[in-house]
Image 1 (cartoon, protein in one colour):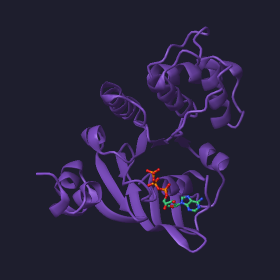
Image 2 (cartoon, helix red, strand yellow):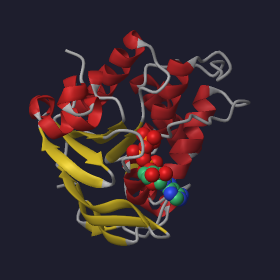
Image 3 (tube, rainbow, N blue to C red):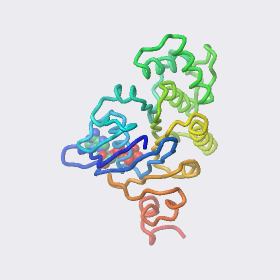
Image 4 (cartoon, rainbow, N blue to C red):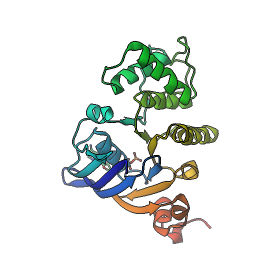
Length: 245
Ligand SMILES: Nc1ncnc2c1ncn2[C@@H]1O[C@H](COP(=O)(O)OP(=O)(O)OP(=O)(O)O)[C@@H](O)[C@H]1O
């Protein structure tokens, strides 16, 4: 297993946002981490990525305990993440943005040529232009999401945590974003944990899903099983008697 989350708990004062969450992700797998708004997805994500310190529990990346390490240290151990709201350096070019991410991922221990090569490779994987003149300014919502992905890929992660990659995209862009994540896994073997609150297109590309509700895991299984599961339907659609026919 590349990622093993065991008994992960995060409390904010007396409120338990993540309650003994356990799941694992095999090398090369795409796992969808789903749940309605407020179910604890972002808190789980941030505990894994080191943006939040878990109250208790274990997070093992490639067999090594990383719970409680800071985000920089976890990135240097091979975890790349995207942010829900892209915040690129707008005054820099796309290549410069990705190059900075490559330096960050390597903890500064690569040459400029190597950082730029990693940056161009990541931009290509994210289907963005690689020429020096390509700027952030002209990118729309989908382009900014791609740049977010390219910045995470430039850190050369073993595990990519994708946070709400579909937010703000239209139907066609969502399909393209989903296919891109699958392509990245297929050609590079990068393991992906993909956090979304909407199921839709995600179910067509993930291998397995974990569904959270009120901070706890209520379902783990294949996308097909998720679509047939009554508890999953309930948290997404409400109780059977209130659903439209
Ligand atoms: N820093 C915080 N302090 C207090 N409560 C918090 C904090 N962060 C999150 N929460 C609460 O924890 C619960 C889980 O929030 P979280 O953001 O993890 O859910 P989510 O599933 O990611 O939701 P969304 O899809 O809306 O992003 C919510 O009730 C939220 O209000």
